[in-house]
Image 1: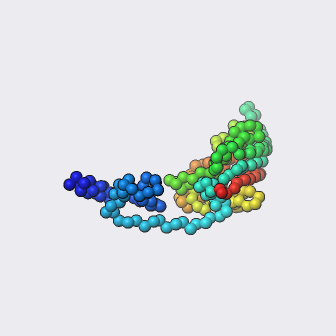
Image 2: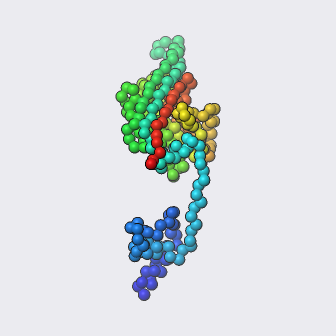
Image 3: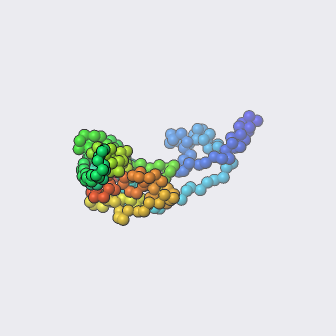
Amino acid sequence: MTLLALVVAVTAGAQHHTTVWPYNPDVDANGNYGSNDLLGFLPLYGTQAQNAPEPCDYDGTEWEQLFFGLLDGSIILDSVYFSFTATDISTYFQAGCPFPITDTVTVSDFIFLSEGNSPNLGGSWSNGAYGVLSFIYSSVSNRYELRLPTSPFILAYTDDGFFGGYSSTSRVREYGLPLDVLAIDSMGVFQNEPPFPLNPSCSMYEGDCTNGISGHSDDDGWTGYLNYAGSDWSLLLYYHELE
């Protein structure tokens, strides 16, 4: 009677059980089917068999395949070289003077990243400041993100109003698929032209869109130094497939 009650209790409480695919009856993963595996199967007793989810046949672009490979570990990122030159023009007033002053600032910097574990690498800018490049995916929000640190040279001018006065971490934010903000060829990573339009009302599942935040935090491609007029940048990735 006790055993029967146990089976009924397990069966009654198992109606909402969800099978995790791929299903493996070897619950304790010891290579044999034993009593522990039988106990692991009991929650499924009396429930309806589930069909395995359909495999995804989306191949993606070359850039997407690289991005996905870095995330799942099938591609190892050995090193990254990034350089840029950015120019900005700002008009401002000095205290006590009614005449505007227009000035031009051009800055350039480079960083070589090789320390760390794929898909995250670290390294130093030309002046020694440390930075990290990261490839990120969130399964909760379906967000793919490529982060690259803002150059300290840019930060030196933000307090004066140059480069939008933006001083937080520079990054790419890309929502959903396709990841069509950037592409890759034999010369490295480049930004597709023309840039896609901002769409404050779009869903994160509809491709690249703004997150509704004004200024340089909008998802209009690269933020920070990469979307200024007159900016020129190069992003070279060196990687290999996992053997």
